[in-house]
Length: 126
Length: 182
Image 1: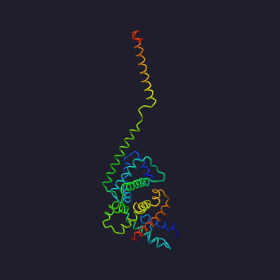
Image 2 (image 1 turned 90 degrees about the vertical axis):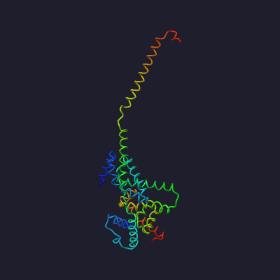
Image 3 (image 1 turned 45 degrees about the vertical axis):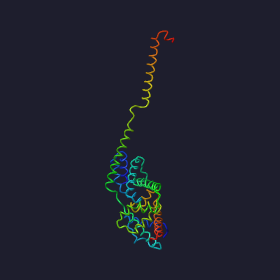
Image 4 (image 1 turned 135 degrees about the vertical axis):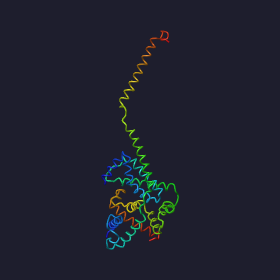
């Protein structure tokens, strides 16, 4: 029996321990590797006992679920705010800014020319 | 089953209730995994919370490409445990053996009301194995995963997992012999 066969037999035995295969240490393949296989499979059975699964405490499970739900809710709310479409396209904002600037410029130049017209010649030359 | 899970993950991206369903499906498995890796209920609680929080935050990046959601979760948990070990080593200056007996395994030994000497010795030997080999034994025997599933979590082929399992048992037997308990 080669190393690969031994590895395969041990893997099948482990599946048997997990209930996913019908192989136990008693029906492992024979041959010169049998004592080695028996020893390692017995060790595997002890490991399985030592690593017996545990469950999360019920109170902890519930609390963590509540906390995660809250985080998920907040994240989704935040994303919705970010994902809301912009009220106006960028070009419209640019155009509005330009328009306001233009109006301001016109008003300013108009008030300046009115000021120039209403001033006396002395004031104008000063 | 896989299709159902895929749909659930899709829904969980926008629906907190669907994420809760995924959480309930896997919380015990992730808790057990982190407990077996650390030997402490308090640390398992912390690492389980970190794992699911990270999964929630990064759910949008998860895609089904031959790796099931559970394998993705285990990988997150694995990374959380690796960081935990790194922090343990950074913050504590005690011998590894002392760490094993006095802190990490204290909960577990309490769990074993009639803890037998050979179980303690076996656990001690397990803890001396490289992280990757400990992980393999935990995924196989405590989580009950198949070699193919373990391969998906650890990023290896099924054949490589079988071979690693064989080498792990040999090393474990060697550890026990060296400690004089075999």
